[in-house]
Image 1: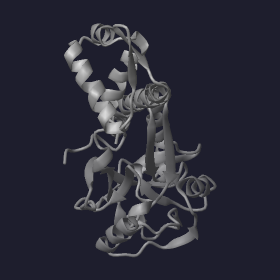
Image 2: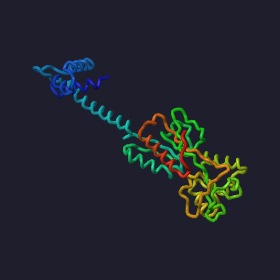
Image 3: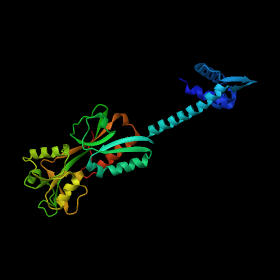
Image 4: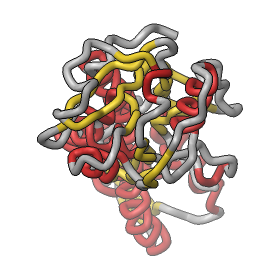
Length: 304
């Protein structure tokens, strides 16, 4: 394989017409330049120069190699720029997965920060309500709901963002409207609107809390997402219990009441691919997520 450094020195000799000129331009000694050119000739098995008086003239083979060297050195320069861009986060891609309520509450600000700070980076965003078992499906950064003790797969790390307590959303005319808080057991006789078609950890967490309070949630209406469930509540069809982050933007005619004894709480984590953990775009995304979680009405995050 040809040595790129020797090609660069050879190209300088061709451009300057002499070893002395190349040495002056490159800041080398004439002896060092001669050694590199001799080594390149030995590597290629070609006669690259012929003497003309006190100077050197490239042979036909030398001229052809010089033309190719221009292209090779140009591509190397492009590669060096690419490496620097990747190191500083000016180019490349970042895959981010998130769940629905975080998508509306946090992701617009995360994406705005990334597009402003790293305009050359392509963002691959995916709405995903679960952590994938298949390594090929895992993102560089996934915002997920899991048990607090969740341990990431090999090659990934976990960052705690927020503990998000649940509230019950009721119509304004409901007897619980305006209450400071409500015991979970008091909701056993209400008409419940389900809000989690995915049947993920958010719903399991709620069902377990209800079991601890001595009942099973009496779901009368099944909705596939928080927004639809809240619309049913606004229409007076029933009540819905969901994490506080999902109740930030309530429809008119509804209000949220904190649930206690017990208070279901979901833990929001950021799962980060170790190989991308030092990339500036990922660091910026994680920093913005921490800022948004600190501003969340659910309260400030704890450290982990």
